[in-house]
Structure formats: C-alpha cells, structure tokens
Image (tube, rainbow, N blue to C red):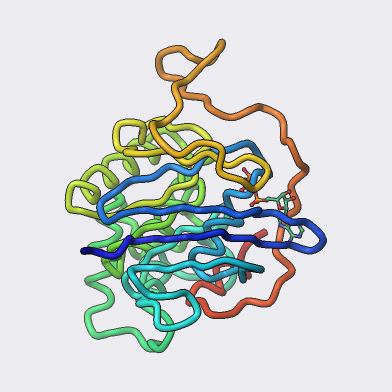
Amino acid sequence: MTAPAIDVRDLHVHLGASHVLRGVDLRVDPGEVVALLGANGSGKSTLVRTVVGVLEPTRGEVDLLGHRRGSDVPWDRIGYVPQRVSAAAGVPSTAAEVVASGLLHRGRLTLPRGWRRQAREALAQVGLADRADDATNRLSGGQQQRVLIARALVRSPEVLVLDEPVAGVDRPSQEAFAATMARLVDDGLTVLVVLHELGELAGLISRAVVLRHGRVVHDGAPPRPHGEHGTEGHEHIHPHTSEVPAVSGSGLGLTDTPFESEQEARP
Ligand SMILES: Nc1ncnc2c1ncn2[C@@H]1O[C@H](COP(=O)(O)OP(=O)(O)OP(=O)(O)O)[C@@H](O)[C@H]1O
C-alpha cells in the first residue's frame, strides 16, 4: 500500500498565546489535489507551515511521504511556495539564481552541475523562459510569484505545497499558473494548496478541506460558490472580513526544515 503524501493527525499548534490549530487531521494521497480553504485567521498558513517543517507542532504527528516529520523526510521530493514573499527580497539576483536556490535543501549546500539548464527549464514551465537573466526586481509581482513557483518546481517535487499562490497576481500569471498546474497534476503531482478562491484551479481540485478556528469543518467536495458571488467567473468562497486579526511573522525558532530563508523573507 502506498503511504499518504501528507498525513497529519491530531495536530495542535500554539503561536504565542494563541491555540491556533486544535486537533487537525489531514490526509493527502498521492495524485490528489487538495484545496485548503477557510476565513482569514482560520489557521491555513499555520497548517501548511507546520506540514513543511517551518513551525513545530505542540501535539500531534505529521508524516510526509511515509516519513515522520522530525526524522528523515526526503525534502528534495517536496516543494513549497510560501505566502506573500517577494522573489526580489534580499540580495540582488536573477530569476535563474532564485530558481536555482530551490535545488538546495537540507544536506545539499552547493548547486549541482547543470543548474542553469534546470533553472531555465523550471522557468519555462511557468512561462518565463525569456526572463532567466533578468534581475528579479525588474519583474512584476505576478512574475515574481511565478519565479517562486519555478523555485519549488526545479527539484521536480512529488508533492507541492502552495500557500495562496495566486493571491494578488495578475490575470496572465494566474492563467499561466493554472496551465502549469494542470500539466503537472496530469503527470501525477500531489498538491496541497491554500486558496481564497478556487478561480482558475477549480477544475483541478479533487477535494477541499475547510478550516474554521483551527479545526476542520469540512473535508470533501469543494464548496460551491454562493450568494451574490455565485456568478459565473467568480468563485468566492470565504467571508470578506477576518474572523480573527492577522499577525504577521512567526517569531518562532525555525527547526527541522529546508525552508528557513523563505520565512526570513516574509514581510
Ligand atoms: N506569530 C504568531 N503569534 C501569534 N499568533 C499568530 C502568529 N502568526 C499567526 N497567528 C495567528 O494565528 C491564527 C491563524 O493564522 P494563519 O496565518 O495560519 O491563518 P490563515 O487562515 O492562513 O489566514 P490568512 O487567510 O489571513 O492568511 C490567526 O489568528 C493569527 O493571528
């Protein structure tokens, strides 16, 4: 029997004084595309950041590709696109250099031979083949987000975890992203994606998990759009107001993860 790609059991996470995740169970099987939905502050980012090893659970277990988090997770088979970071943060870099950093992970601190070709191929997957040598600060926000997706794809992951990959991204980048995802999912990629709107990805989603106040309140078919937003072309599935005010930055120590620098770059 194949192990689940992601298997979270009875997960509790505290951030500061807040009990953010309160007994979350989440299973993603190989080849599934699972959307993680919920109002602002419901705990979506906290869940995916704990899954990829950026945050520590207070209680509960996280297994990735059959490996218990905290032991020998094969991070090179897992890609992560964090929320709201700029690809242009930090030192000046070209798009290809940012993408190549995705080839580094725990235990590998030098770029492999052929990294330029790999970076270009990953950029081609997100429609940016011709921008490889451009400084990232010359790219639009949407293009920078595509660079970060290419950085996750460059290691040819089996599992891709994305935190609101198209939030605030221009239409051409959303469409390019959806086309890339469709191709990768067709090739068997497993996806856990935090979304506010199903949007262009609606046709790819096999299951939706909805969080509310740190608990799973729905695990099954994606919810249908409703109310005044239930019109063609507008798949709005979250309340407009935050249930809980957002606090940016984790303020926590970072352990057991190849993804530290992404969190440091978080505004
Ligand atoms: N470092 C922190 N310290 C204390 N509380 C935090 C911290 N980071 C986040 N929180 C709180 O944890 C809760 C969940 O936040 P999280 O970012 O996981 O929610 P979310 O569902 O991803 O929201 P959004 O849709 O706004 O991104 C919120 O109440 C938030 O204020």
